[in-house]
Length: 135
Image 1 (cartoon, one colour):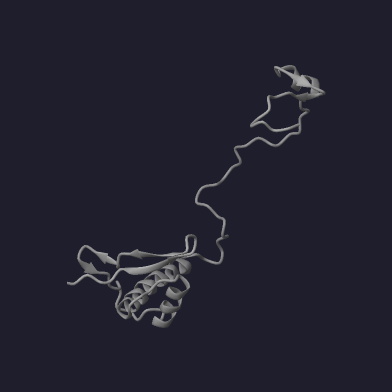
Image 2 (cartoon, rainbow, N blue to C red):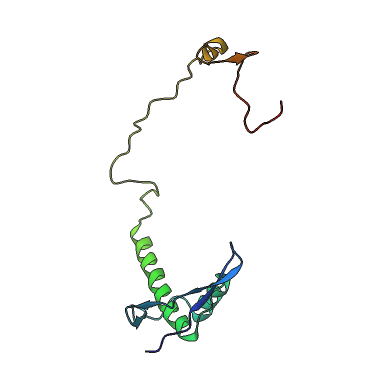
């Protein structure tokens, strides 16, 4: 099997083209898992590839259409299991709040806060200048 050309990928964060390896597992090209017709068309895969700025060969369009179809079919099966009578945020185990209630408590006075400071000035913490800033 002769190696395919690398896939050219445009990185939007750093505007340059990157090269990625073609989709291979071992020495075999990836193939769709199921034999059912894919629920996504080649044109839709090509459109997604353009949006992602990926160069995809004609052969890869068929492969990716099958793989994405398998994924969409699996998601559809999962959504069939979720019944209308089950709220979206339900859990198998009951959830209890382990945190205490928020209670407003009085804080330190200005004098109490400044009492532990090595140096204070005009009711504020006095700290050394940083990086030669001017006052």
